[in-house]
Each structure stands twice: as structure tokens, then as C-alpha cells.
Image 1 (cartoon, rainbow, N blue to C red):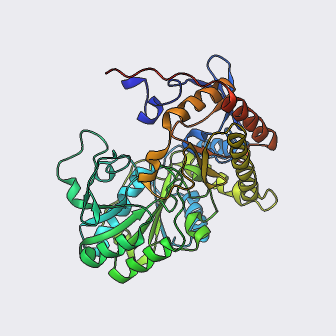
Image 2: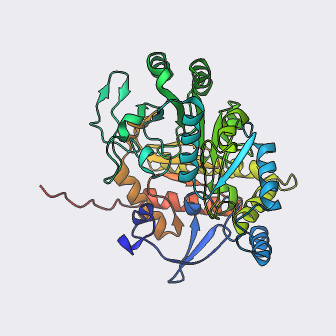
Image 3: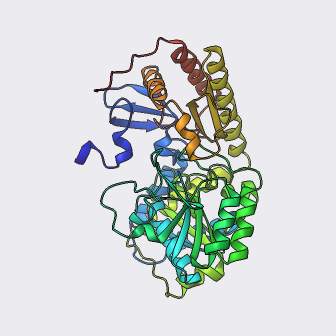
Length: 425
């Protein structure tokens, strides 16, 4: 296997790419028989926990009737109707397999609808790994400003030449700069795309009035507003961040938590825009789209999340806030400056002297080496974390799990620090 992994994000696992044999609830068991308490949740999808019985039953029943029809089926319509009832902007729906594909479709239909060539993205926001959005995801400190804009920074080698001309890059949470760019160049801009909470770099919440201001500016200039809710969707509310913050985009992309680890994503949006796709003027395709098992997993996941007797969203927020407070208290007790930002079901932890992180450039003040050391210490104590600082809480976690994690963090933070290797030169 190239690099020993099937996704580059797995190559950065601490201390090395790990191999697991089983997963159930909030726990993973590796091939050596070691059990770990899991706060990575497979990078977010496992909102109900691993191997949830209702999801597995639904999938087994679905595939007993057929794996893939290559045509429409009733469960697909049922899922689309459910999304329409839950998500404020969802008047029409299309399914794909991954968030990257759904983002690609969203930008294509926005260009088709507006007949404009460019889109605006924000520095530090992640919208998948396709060429046209692989810019300014984690740029260096030296990336220069160009007038009101930031210079698009390539994320990887191998990106097609000239794609920089298709996008404009702005800092997150700077409404005045966005307004100024749209005043000057709005006639070129098909879409503004954003993570409504900047989860991939610091879990940075939108400043008060920012989302509302972006919505107004897009309306004024005829620009399509796209929310990338691959992380926030069904994690912070049943209708995503747009329901939580009461700001409705024109299009939105969902994935991850929607189907408990099965590969499905959704592009949802306002009828007037999605009609370009419905009429066939804007092509969207995929052999495996709305595959039987994936649709069944999504339906089962959403039914569990919406079960009023279980009240899982209250549990996710309660346990998440309890964990955040416990980690903050552990940092204070060890006299280490820890900053925790985000919402209970998903948040970010980092070592910094800052009281608040508001945009990507602020994240340079995090001590990433110290956090990697913390992850190693937590791993030794049976807790699995994501090395870039994002934490996920599942409905399978218990108060006992939260307390165990906090206890491990206290031990880890008060343990002698591991000396960092000297750098050559």
C-alpha cells in the first residue's frame, strides 16, 4: 500500500498508522488486543458509536434484498424526504458517496445557475481533496496578501495549472473584507463556500453576526451561499449548523455523521438552483450513488438521532461540555495554558497562550509539538485522539467514559514531558 494507508490523514496517526480488529460502542480493539476509548470516531462519522445494532440490522436487511439496483428505490426517496423535513435549505436533494464529490457538485451547480466562473473560500477551511478546492487549507505563515485577498496556497503537488484563477481566498470571520471583495468583484463570483464552524482548523465558531452578514452580502450580489456541513451536519443539530445558527444557505453539503460510517453524502438546496441539475443542464452522476446499504444506514442513523425518548442531542451536548470543562480544569491544575473551542459534540483542544482563536492565522500560536506529545501520552493511557486537536463525542460515550478520559488527561498533563529531538542544523 502506498505509504501503508488508504488516506493520507491516516499516515499522521500517533504514534504510527494503527491497525484495528474490532469496534463497538465508544471503543476500538487493535490487532494486538489493546482496547482504547475512542474520541476520533473515524474522523467524525460514528455519531452513534461503533457497530450500532440498529444501523447494522438495517444494513443487513437492505443488502439481503439487493446491493445495488442502478435505479431508484423507495428507501432513497424516504431518505430524501427526511432530509427535506430536517434541513432548512433542503428543497431538492442529490446523493453522492463522499463529501468531496458533493462539494464538487455544489460548485458546479452554483456556476451553472449564476453563469459566473469564480468562488470564494476561506483560509483554513477544508472542502475535500479535489484539485479545485485544494488551496489554502493549511498554508504557511509566509503566504502574502494581495489587496483584500490572500494568495491561494496549493495544498499538494499535482494540482492542475491555472486553477488559482477560479477562486478568491479570504480570512475567516472578516466580514468587512468579504463585503469589500464582493462590492468590487461580485459579478465574477458564483458562490461563497464555508464550513459554518471552522472545524478542520481549531473548531472556530463564527463571530456574532458573521453568518448573517455573509448571507446578506450574497443576497445583495446574487452570489450562491454554500455551507459545507460534512462535519456539522447532524452532529450539532438535526438540521445542521444552519438550523443551530438560524442562517439558511442556498446549498449545503452533508456526509460523515449522516450514515454512521457508510459512504454517502448529500447535496441539498433551494429548488431554483437545484433545478439546473434536475433538468440535466448541470450533470451530476455516480454509479454507486444512493447504494442500498448506505441509504439504509443513513435512515437508521437519523431515526436513532431523532428518537425523542433517547434525546441524544441533549446527551451529546451535555457530555461534550462536561469533557471540555474537565480538560480545561486538568490544564489549570497542571498550570498549562489550554484553549478549548467549539461546541460540545465537536471541539478543539490546543496548547496556547491565546484566550481566543478567531481565524486560521491565530492557529499558528498553538504548540502542535506539545499536543502530539499529549496524544502519545493519552494513547499510552488507552485513549485515542486525532493529532490535529479535533475531538468528537458519540452517543455511545458514557459519563464513566468522560471521567476516565479526564483522569487520563490529568495524569498525562502532570507527567514529565518527553524531550523533543534536536533538529538538524
